[in-house]
Image (cartoon, rainbow, N blue to C red; front, top):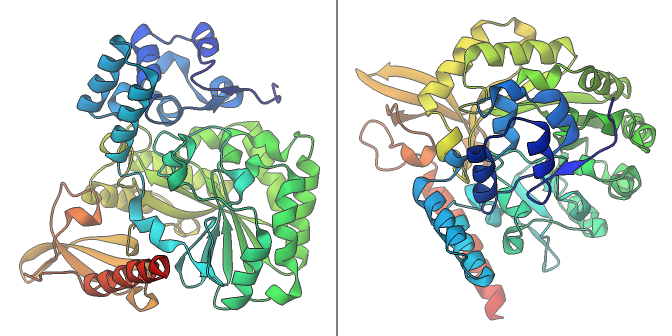
Amino acid sequence: MNNVFKSYSLRNYEEISQMTKLSKSDKKAIELVGNVLPFKTNNYVVDNLINWENIPNDPIYTLTFPRKEMLLGSHYKHVEDMVNANVPREKFLEEIYKIRMELNPHPAGQIHNVPKIDGIELQGVQHKYRETVLFFPSQGQTCHAYCTFCFRWPQFVGMNELKFAMKEVDLLTRYLMQNREVTDLLFTGGDPMIMKTKILSTYIEPLLDEKLHNVQTIRIGTKAIGYWPYRFLTDDDADDLLRLFEKIVRTGKNLAIMAHFNHPVELSTAAAQDAIRRIRSTGAQIRTQSPVLKHINDSPEIWAEMWRKQVNNNCIPYYMFVARDTGAQHFFAVSLVEAWKIFREAYQRVSGVCRTVRGPSMSSTPGKIQVLGVSKVKDEDVIVMRFLQGRNPDWIARPFFAEYDENAKWIDDLKPAFGEEKFFFEEELEKIFHEHVYDDEVENFE
């Protein structure tokens, strides 16, 4: 058991090349694509999760290693031409930045979610939905390994103007006390589990104060169970971490570990299963989520197996997402209709205890939109949807309809059904964004 963490990136991926069967074209793709999108993996992923006899089609390899197809053909050729021409570094980085900006680095209007307190903008906080606040601790803005589909990829490539992070926990607690409608705080990143327990405690301890009685659930989003389960087993502060979890639960708050699993193989190792058992022994819940991803899990058989394994390990299937409209979406995304078919067929294959999962869901600008299915209304084929979360809570659970489009991959690709000009929420959404921009302009002017 090699439980000493070792990271691989563009700087030292040749070590992997010497141990595995990477071809020249595989290595070239890693080098070229890795100039645009982030690349980082580790020895646990390399040694335990990837089938090196199935390169480059192995799902976990695709999940963690850059492939040529993850860039659009024109972008790949541009990077290749610049490398071959030995373009000066400054010019090279300038062109790479242009490519990144064409990949929609800020999807779902995230910049509009940043709140203020006493005139101070909380750059490490997002408050999009009434009951839930997202917090980005500054020391948790990396991961044990990077997912190639990740919508937060700009945070890992040095696009600092698009980065969310904050150290000041006192500002966070003041905001939570002034916004008593907030019941849930989600630690996200990056991956908060990259932090040492001592650091994580400095963020969590203040939240356990009775003054913050409105915060009833603390969520921690993490990929660590899949990518580095030793964080909960043998890391030098693993036991301290579990004691912290126990302390949260003892205060009467609900602790939910929001675990990302993209393929059943991530649940297959003894280390991952032991990590789940240790976490569950503290009284914490583990809820699971993943997007449906072409080349990785785009079949109902895989999803049914994954949900069943999660439940067998006492985890709660929570979300099936749709690949966001950013980064390598063109490589990973399936159509909304196909995502619904995968969800429906997988749902049919499992028992009721697995059917806690919701999806397929788009985390879009107006909110989390679930594709309920395809139906026929007034002799017209339509896609039926509803909000699971919305910028306006009144939008939640209201069914609405789009024209049938078997190629649409995102809400922006769809048109309202029955000749309507706009979806029911669009005018209000425009007003919300206009007010946000106007407020910022007034403040900047003053």
